[in-house]
Image 1 (cartoon, helix red, strand yellow):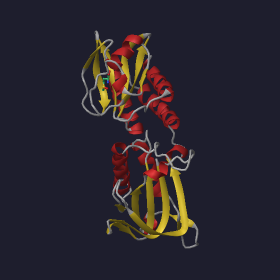
Image 2 (cartoon, helix red, strand yellow):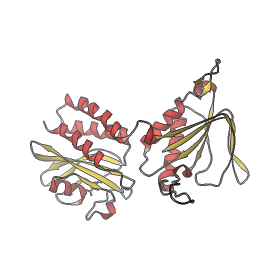
Image 3 (tube, rainbow, N blue to C red):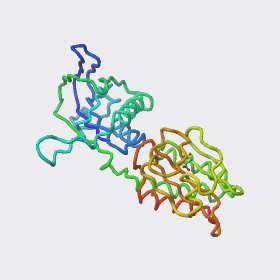
Image 4 (tube, rainbow, N blue to C red):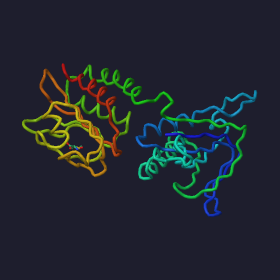
Length: 298
Ligand code: SME
């Protein structure tokens, strides 16, 4: 996710000659979303924007945040931030997320600025032909890119693992620990569905999870979860539609990772995570999640 922050003394956006958003002093934001972005990226950049100190104090130093100057935000969606200009003279926009992904995330980003940071946020209209007029005061223009801001997937897993360890080290009950781990993974990554299936007899039975309603029982060898149990191998599925026998608990799920959980060599459960975007999971997820579930082997 990319956000261009421009310090402004006044800004407005028009659609068909009608003003749909207008602010005085504050930030004009251009917001671009790429495939793989989640609410975690939006949370992170909203916090950066809300806390950024680029207004001058009494000594003329860039020191004050939006709140301290009573500033407002005009937020404009801008898929061209993901133009790839390396080849030829016509930019490619293949890295920009599809509207079905980008629009809800853009709305979410604006809502976080409003609700968590109590900022006044005006917007344009996603996908519309807009005319934006503004004064760039300075000029001051800052580029924020969630891929370059120290908030990579590895760093989030690195921060999460010790927390999980601390939380479950003093609790022996597997279900309680699964519940907290599902919650912590969900809070960190906001995946579509994050949860556990436990081995009970010859079936996997639904355990603690975060996300929408899910199927309760999965036979060995069935679906991604049953395959994980049968083979004892982590399953990384970039496109669930291409996985033979995938069990669609929700039609929104598009990619999935399932990790076997062992205790003394026996598989006792699987950790299942679903994403509403394609190809969300890779070797980094596999490595950290396998590490995480080792905490059950005691
Ligand atoms: N898709 C899984 C079923 C569980 S849900 O994703 C929560 C599977 O194919 O095993």
